Image (cartoon, rainbow, N blue to C red; front, side, top):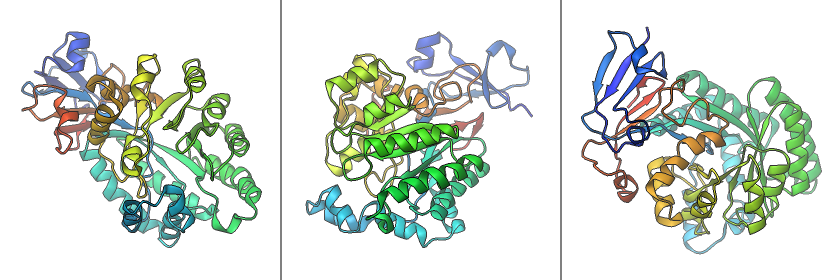
Length: 396
């Protein structure tokens, strides 16, 4: 069954209408198609002058995790830094202990509950990382959960990422080179050969992994066909931008700290800069220079960084708001950053992120009462979504 639909009567200020002059969108077989190619029995969907947007794309998440970390919330309120909490046994290692104690089935069920909520909030394509396993078996367990999510939510583009170099496991604190070797010689081959990962990622940051360690891991990932991503420049200028560009990373994420030299390097590269304003808000650290990067022509993208320790938010409407309020992006710039630019940061610009013939038919329909696109980031406490379409079918 083709599921052919003609979605019509869009708000005239919808970006798609302004760009094309068309007031209808044609969908068939889960893809956007030419209107004149639709079958005569296509279902007419009148959205009654509602704004219709491309489905949101979240290019950086840690959706698979065992449990929340609200016990660290009080530590943050009392002024403890990210590094101090980690040194006290919190942070990534706290999540790792909880995940190691949980069965794969239980982990999968929790991930499904989160995925259901994510989809209802308008996210129609997503990247999901490992990184809370910190053993060979548990990192692979996380990636198997992501594969099960791909099978369960087969209508949705889900990109899995191996992030075994997220933190140094406790057992290797005095022998860090051994963990690097395990990542390179055991985990990367296993993830690639099992088709469990699309990306390889490293937390290239002071107190975590060095530039040289990052380069070694990315190079090994490339040998096995894994495309690179980087966590970089969150806490300090870490060299993450340079190593990302050197290894042709699809994106470099965080960038709360950045130099003029690094901005120029990014501008001359194909690496997408990604800001994570949920993390900046939650940790009380600077925000990436999103507006400046966009005004200088870079395809700046946004993501939720959904995780239990530093950004417990999955709703891209909130990310849209934070980008406008704190990064001073215009509503349209921020929308681009959570759709078409975010798709670039997932290496998926041909598949998702825009309303274009051939792309997956992913849409967000806003509440009919909304008569100005700026209302969505303005009303940061509201759910402004009426409907969500993924691959041509309404899921919310």
